[in-house]
Amino acid sequence: MQPEKTDVLVIGAGPAGTVAASIVNQAGYKVKIVEKQLFPRFSIGESLLPRCMEALEEAKFLDAVKARNYQQKNGAKFEKNGKICNYFFNDQFTDGWGWTWQVPRADFDHTLAKTVESQGVPVEYETGVTGIVFHPDGTSTTTVEDKDGNKREIFARFIIDGSGYGRVIPKLFGMDRPSNLPPRKAVFTHIVDTKRSMDDEPDRITIIVHDKAVWIWVIPFSTGVTSVGFVADPGFFDQFTGSQEEIMRALIASQPYIAERMRDAEYVFEPRVLQSWSATTDKFYGDGFVLTGNVTEFLDPVFSSGVTLATVSSQMAGKLVVKKLKGADVDWDNDYMKIMQQGVDTFRSYVMAWYEGTLDTIFFADDQDLEIKRKICSVLAGYVWDTDNDYVKNHDTALKKLAKTIHLRDSIQYINNGFK
Ligand code: FAD
Image (cartoon, rainbow, N blue to C red):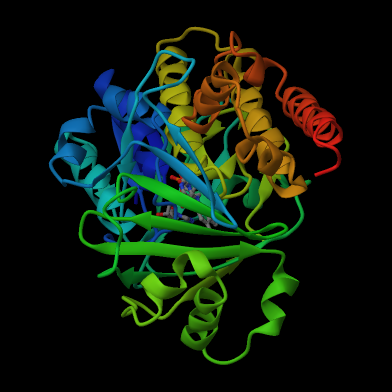
């Protein structure tokens, strides 16, 4: 049998795959998505960042997403021992979106997939990629397998791998590399949140500092359901025993900020566990393919960077694939990988500063410098490519310097107050 032919084969119908497919399709090329699972399917990553709105807009997904009436997200609230620090995206350094959404991902991803289908891109569900052969001219023949074990081939001029944790091309071609971040574990569920506060929620997410390097996400949805998850070094969870629900209830009971509100809450599903998610790869592209989204690198959930990096990388890669299909030369290294790496590295500095406690010092300091706060807010909004922002440009040093200045100021004040 002759293989099916397409200009671009996209692997995975998550946010990365659908955004990339839409952009290539809009340029008039034939695109096909193969997706291993049947949608709607559960996925984690419910808190978006304003920067991803630009990618959703370019993919022409915004109207469909707006119609789902998801909870608007205006900012992020950090809590530690009763102290609160709010960041509001409409008060940030970079010009850009001042809000985004908190989304149940099964519904959100299904909305994006249905929208890209309505734009004319076929999505073949329950069809996984099992092998790829690249030909010398960069074209490829991909073997896919459906749920009944039937195999067939798809010939493509170019492949966009948006397979997320599936990491199809890195795994098939030995490009997978371990991350330089230590392994972490998350235990999470969705609760029916009848005691939700309406004062400083639900229009933002809350990140609670539970203990050193142990934190909790609280992400309210417009449905009255709230996502709650604990993230820590895997060893932290060893002190808790029992079923996943018993462990989750004990975790919640141990955190005063949510214990009362969530004590008797009904769980929408048995708490789930994920761990050791950070991964990276040598290269984000090769002859005949580009990697987008989580396949390139996934760091850590703390600053909700995953979907933003997934959609922005696809927005960028999709346009470069179009350029390539038109016959132009593409400088993948400078025009894609280095730019994406800079965004990832900026988030990496913030993730490391979070786990080292540097960001605690900054977030919960008294008398904060509002101009600096606006610059940090831009990073938290996902504007990690704005190098006019010195908290982006000098991401690896700026936070440490700021924390040192705060410590020094506090020490001087302590001395001036007679050690009180
Ligand atoms: P995915 O959404 O994973 O989509 C990839 C798709 O590819 C899947 O549907 C999969 O079925 C398909 N696929 C896999 N293998 C194959 C194959 N062989 N053939 C065909 N299809 C295949 N991000 C945020 O932005 N905000 C958050 O609040 C957040 N919280 C997180 C919490 C935790 C605990 C973790 C671990 C991650 C979190 N993330 C968060 C990250 C987020 O989950 C991902 O970054 C995001 O889903 C990446 O999107 P993607 O499109 O690259 O991949």
